[in-house]
Figure 1 (cartoon, rainbow, N blue to C red):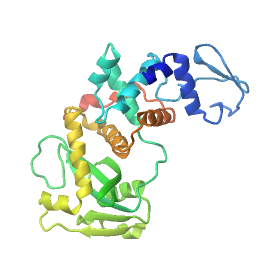
Figure 2 (cartoon, helix red, strand yellow; figure 1 turned 120 degrees about the vertical axis):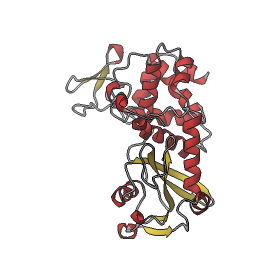
Figure 3 (cartoon, rainbow, N blue to C red; figure 1 turned 135 degrees about the vertical axis):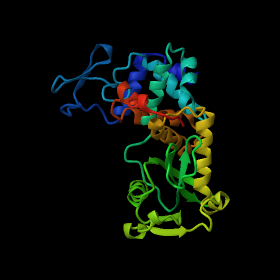
Figure 4 (tube, rainbow, N blue to C red; figure 1 turned 180 degrees about the vertical axis):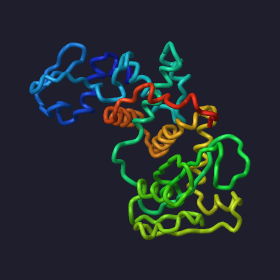
Length: 305
């Protein structure tokens, strides 16, 4: 009801996006001038170069044919569900005519769930790989049909702090080290298993503790060795199968990982409004995502997750 009262008109939605996009006042995307006047249909005309801008241009809302009021309702529903929501649910709740619209909106929002310049993980961090997908014959740490997901989880006492997830093509040294350098701040203490590819992290500015398993396939021992990353991996697989019924194409997995990370790292937040604000704030900071970019390559996919 609060959402409906506050964002019942297009003008109210545009004003809110304006405050998020230019919190310190308008700056022309072309010349940087602060002088602006508002024209019809939500247009913003720069007083310096006469460039016509809008609060949606250059964001995930660009070229949308649906009212912002509907977008706001969709975002409220996305952040309000503890375990996320599916495109079918969004379609039914908003009364959208087609499934593809709901699917497209969710994928655009997933791209907004990664904050540009987010802080890297710090302190003590567990790192391990997991495999996501359907049945596959035993190929060790290689994969033919499953996707390899690298999991990093901060230690927070006996609990879990923030996490990072990424789909990786292989478990070679270069791949693992690149992920760690991207997501974990130098000076952190890393705890991994005995995989040879993790060697050399000390030279990159990390303190590295490696604990080898007596038996490579002893899953119970692996879970005891790195309990946090195994807990995260278990929750991830349950979420993919529960909320999304396992119907996630491999080429889209990266964005589902982003959504899971967004939700997990904010799992203790009791303010639905704050999550709504944060997602919209990030949504006006990323580039537009055309539909053909979202669906690119899906026709060549030969397996689901």
